[in-house]
Length: 191
Image (cartoon, rainbow, N blue to C red; front, side, top):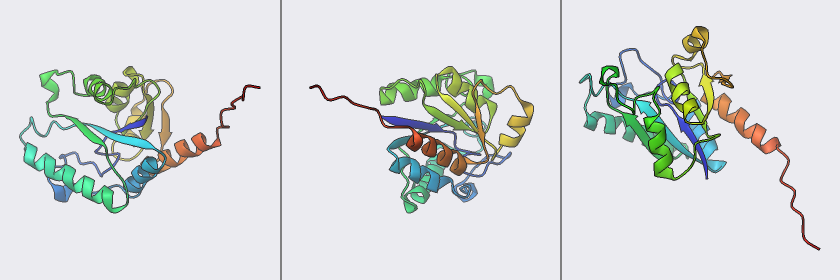
């Protein structure tokens, strides 16, 4: 199974320093949903791993988060994209939980749910904590410059091997092009 793990805010949709607190505030980044559709067409299962501390901060509740995710699913389906699962951490940083990125708890849960190793699985984020959580789980880190990405690149400290792209659409295009350029495996027919 081919799997890719995406952060939500700043990767798929516009980010906000004041949090995305309602479906109306959830606005896709141009080309992001189409990129997910291309991933689906290439056989990828798309999973989201997102810190959602707005719940712990009481900026929105679970029903609002579900409504935001319903809008995301519906918008994705309009362009032929399918998001297989959404994992999120509802805790604040002070809770010191294992599921909040940069810790790897959410990624470990994804590996369990899909019964796969995350070694070599691409993960895309716009913040250092997104990349760190993926990297310590064995994922290949990709930074996009949307959302907090520009600031993250300027701050530095990226995990080794992090590849940087302007946005999700460009990252997906490059990744899929590299994969299609690989020569097919040679099989021998016993004589």
